[in-house]
Amino acid sequence: MSYVIFFLFLLAILFFWQSDRQRKAAGLPGGRVIYTDTRGWGKVEKPLFYSALGLTGKPDYLIERNGQLIPVEVKSGRAPQAPYDSHVFQLASYCLLVEKNHGKRPPYGIIHYENRDFAVDYTRELEAALIDLLADMQADDIKREVDRSHEQPSRCARCGFRNVCDQSLV
Image (tube, rainbow, N blue to C red):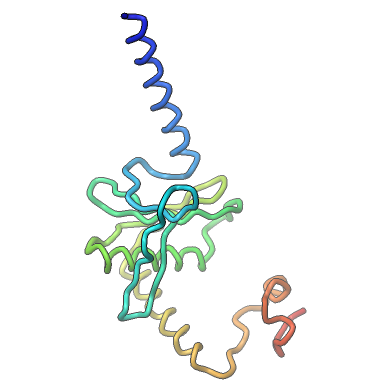
C-alpha cells in the first residue's frame, strides 16, 4: 500500500513539474488563466468591447495575478530588439478593454514572442497615445484617400492593396 501512495506522490510531482514547464513555454506568468483565445483550449469567450471608442478585441490570454488582470498577446515570430509599436498599441488596446469591461486597470501587459517576453507598462501616457491613434484611425476611415504611412518597400510588397495603390513603393 505504501508503494502505491509513494508512486502517486511521484506522479503528482511529475504532473506539477510538467504543467510548470508548459506554462513557462507558453510565456505565461504565474497566476490563474481566466480567459484564453487559443484554439483547442475550449470555448472562446466573447470579445471585449468598449462602445465609446468603438473598440473590440480579444487578448490571447487574460491572467489573474495578485488580484490584477494582465492581458497577454502571443506572437509567433522571434522577438525584435524592442516590441514593435503596432504590438504595443495592440496590447494597450487590450489593457483599455480589460479596464472598461472588468473595472480593473491592468498595471501592464505582456507580449510573448517565440524567444522572449516583454512586459509593457500600461501608463496614462500610453493610454493617451492609444486614444489619439484611434481617433486618427477613425478620421482616416472616413477619408476617400489616405496617404501611405511609411517608407518601407517590404510593407508595400505584402500589402493587399499594392495592385491598386498609387503610392506603392514596389
